[in-house]
View 1 (cartoon, rainbow, N blue to C red):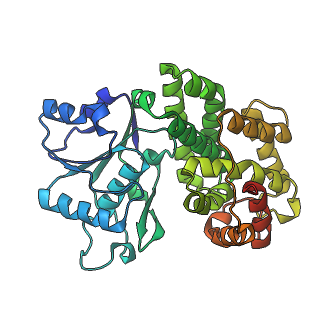
View 2 (tube, rainbow, N blue to C red; view 1 turned 90 degrees about the vertical axis):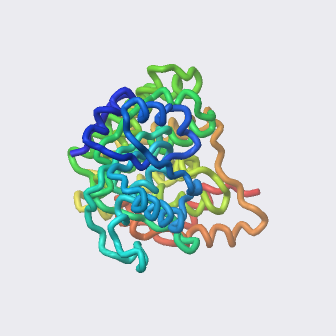
Length: 366
């Protein structure tokens, strides 16, 4: 069972029993003074920060080599999703055969202690069993129960200094995860409870978090993002995430921005296609879930909730991508890129032809 700690002051508790720390960190590392804290605790440490924002397999291999060479027993990840993803993969691969491709070997729990301190409030990666790295230019999704960090430390003060656009994108990613997990075909009573808490919290605090930057709102949004991450860990993401990945690479929109432009269009489509329902609980059940989500967003009907979501995007000035001169080619490329595995989690089936039309609404004409 993962332990969630509130505040960086709990680092000493989380590190109890650790002898030597392997610190995986990005540029946000200096803001938390982790190095000073480790020195005060008398914990020797090794720093690994040689990885890109979209981590490469080769980056992880360097981390594994350094972890093994320095004989650390605990991995401490500090930063955004990239830092945590790298740390997860180092934990998973550190006892594998280095002469073979790690991605092709059997995943087992290595028993290495992993602690995560997120410095953004978006993916909830500090509480999920997923990691993403790139091998030979292709995205690789790494999934294993053992890479859920043993402990997560939520320190909201790190959100106060984030660039405003990053705050917007990561917050919308958390909101989308809360919504998607709720309607996923894999949802459970537990996941829906987590989703509800995440969505309600974000809807209550988002304006204050973005436009007033208060301490209370930062704490609330960080907690909500973590809850959404816990929910997604149970259910996995659905169509909006599946649609977002190629938008990110083709139009260079950050992940949260890309997911958020997809969600209201796909939600609208799902309400209009009950005959394509693939959730075994039936479309009547899905309709009730859609209404529950709308209620959690503070509205009384689904259409108003969709409009409200679009209104938030407008207030945040998160615009839809715009196609170039080869619009049809771009739409075809997008519609062929959608991961069918993610679509299996979606309550309403979406064909490639449907995806083309949905992308036509998501991506605006030049």
